[in-house]
Image 1 (cartoon, rainbow, N blue to C red):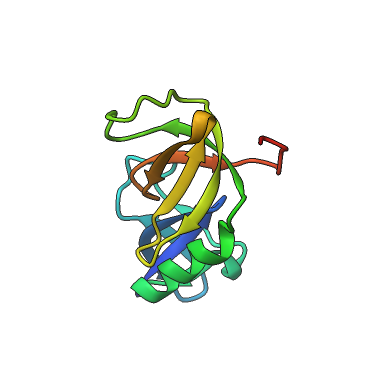
Image 2 (image 1 turned 90 degrees about the vertical axis):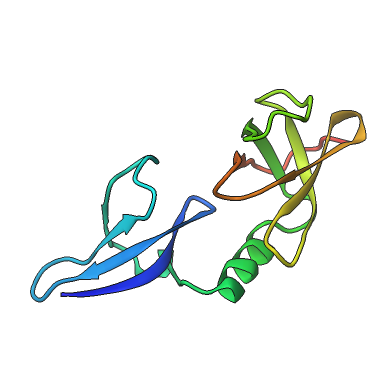
Length: 128
């Protein structure tokens, strides 16, 4: 059995965890934090696996969330911002740490940290 640290692309959000490869059996992914949506997942598409490096993490978010990408805020971990869940906004830019800087209604800005804050990518809408 061989275990490798990887990120798993779960619909545009990278989940850190282990890929477990077994002889003559299907490989599967186990997230480090199993409090999420699943405890393990069999690997059907190896393209969903990304090397476990800071550089690949940054590159993924910069390539996936271009400026203008529409997103919906589902839950902000620190509730200091007065932007309610379900608010739709757009990505202004992604910084070098992979944090999304977003603009919501009334030009309110908010940073979203993947893996901490919960959001999802929306189909492009004409918002502004």
